[in-house]
Image (cartoon, rainbow, N blue to C red):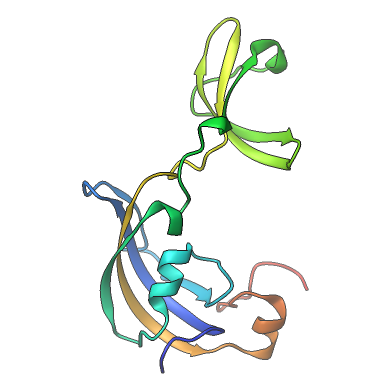
Length: 161
């Protein structure tokens, strides 16, 4: 069966940076199961899956615009440390911030006595990614999966309907 929109795809993957630094992998774990065409995966990987079949293995390079986007300098902000009064802030902490556009995840990238620098970019923004992928299985989605908008795995889909 060939992967098309609304196929349920089971895959193993390893994602790394151009220099070979491994970022994530399903090796030694359960494979990832996704409903194709619902943008559960980054755009570049999801697009590359179309037309593939069970058993296929492939390598894929994905540019930032088809992954987590380019870095946006304006998403790095210096804010007064008084905004974090009573909190023990450290570099690397992430939290939700309220912005004019709504809730946004930010990561603390620098701290001083007077200010905290936060970054609203995705940690992988601006980074080309390399994927090694093995398509383990492909099947048609059930009516329930299509209605819910995601693939169901053995043992349930992890939430109440």
